[in-house]
Each structure stands twice: as C-alpha cells, then as structure tokens.
Image (cartoon, helix red, strand yellow):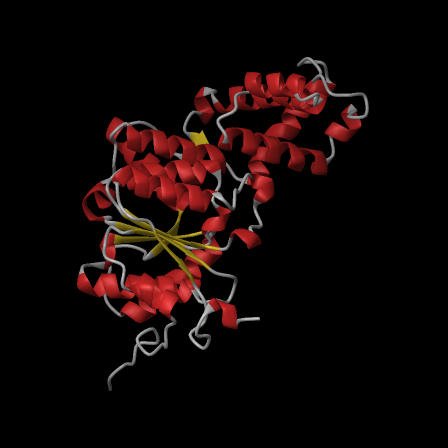
Length: 318
C-alpha cells in the first residue's frame, strides 16, 4: 500500500508555493491571518527541504510546548522517516540544551528552569521578609500596602514586570531611574524587589537556575561566546519560526545568535493577533528582525502574503 502524503496532496496558493520553493539559507517573511495557511506553507517548505537535504538541517520553532508537540507530530507523519531529534521545538527547549551543553563542557551544575510557581514562592518569601522588617520596605506609593503586596495577583503582576525588565536587559538600577524619569513610583518599588529577586538567584544553590526570560538571554550569550552544541553547529542550516508575532526581545536575541551560525530564516506570523504583549512580545519585531538579517547578509528579503489556495489573490478575500 502506497501512503499519500497529506502535504503532497495539498493545493497551494501562489504565496504558499513561493515559500515552499525557497532555497536552503533564504531569508523570508510570510504574513497571513489565522487560518490563511501559514503553517501549511511552513510544513510543505520543511518537507521539501527535508527530502532534498536532511530534516536535521532544518530547525522548526513553535511559540509554546503545545504548538511544538502538535507541529512535531504533523511533520513526523508527513516526512515518514527517521530523524536524529524532534522536528519542532520551542526556543526555551533550544536555550536549555545550549546551557546544558555549556555546563557539561565546563563541568558545572546542569541548568534548571524556575517555574512560574517557584518564582511566586520566591517573591512571596521576599514579601514576608519585608513585612517582618528583615528587609527595608519597598518605596511603593501609599496605596500599595503590605496587604496588597501579599496578594497573589500582585505577585503575578510583579513577575510580569520583572520578566519584561529581563527581556529588555533593564537592571534594577535602570528600572528605578526610569521610574523617577517617567513619574512611575511603582517602578521604583518594583526595582527594589527585583534587586532582591536577582540576588536570590545569584546565591550558590540557585546559580544554575534560570527563569524563562533569563534562560533565553543567557543562551544567546553562550552561543556568542562560541560554546555551540554540535547538533546546532554541524546540522542547522535553515530556521522556520511559526507564530513569529509572539517573539519577545529575548527570543529575538537568541534567534539572532542562532542565525549568526549561518542559518537561513523564514518567519511566519500575523502582527495583528499577538497575545503575549504583557510578556514583552513585539508583533513588529518579526519585520525588523527579518529586514535587519537580510541587510546584514546583503541578500534580498523575500516577503509574501499567505492566503488560502481557493482565493486567487488576497484582495479576493472579504
């Protein structure tokens, strides 16, 4: 019995076909709304290149673990061949493997990811120390009392501000300065908690532990220092990013370090549907990053609008 590949049997639009035909190492940007066929184009592009070269040459990145697992299953079903590793991953997974490789090279402790619940525990313990007078009370406005600081909702907001600060490489001192300049006294208070949070992570028993934002930032530094896992150095020639509108500054930093290894890049996304703005996602970053990479390499950026095959042109779609 001959298996019919579900991607091979697809009718593709001109925009989708343009992506599928891109050579290994191209720099491109594919924009389309949800349901327009961006991920279909990504899968078809992956399949063509995987058959011509090797699936190990292509790094497919999804926005989260659920999307990565779904994409991984679909790519494996379409390719129907053996691979050396997962066909789709998250940037956090890649960052973790980079830091693990670095730790093994140096003979140091293996990295650990601090979960959101663990972050909440650390912040709750700091608030308790503030309340007991062990640590100086943060310089918050009067309406942010110790009772407010003890609320789980407050700590969730605090985690978001700290994550955004780490994403943008803003130190506690810089955040405090911004709070004064922008007349945001809340930021000054947060900066003091942020400083204690970082100090906690720098303690010997936490020295190998990273929160999600710091994980990406540190992995980019390790790559740029020349400590590159062999699977990335030898195999990855092309990177495909789904839902690129969700890229945060730290994610762009790590992608930048990965592309400095020489890999091509195709970003798929829709700037109008970003959902992670509260975690510093910048929907326009995909445009800026693709354009910057193309200019840096002196190549033409391929930009295409993805739409379903049944429509002859985007203007035909109401």
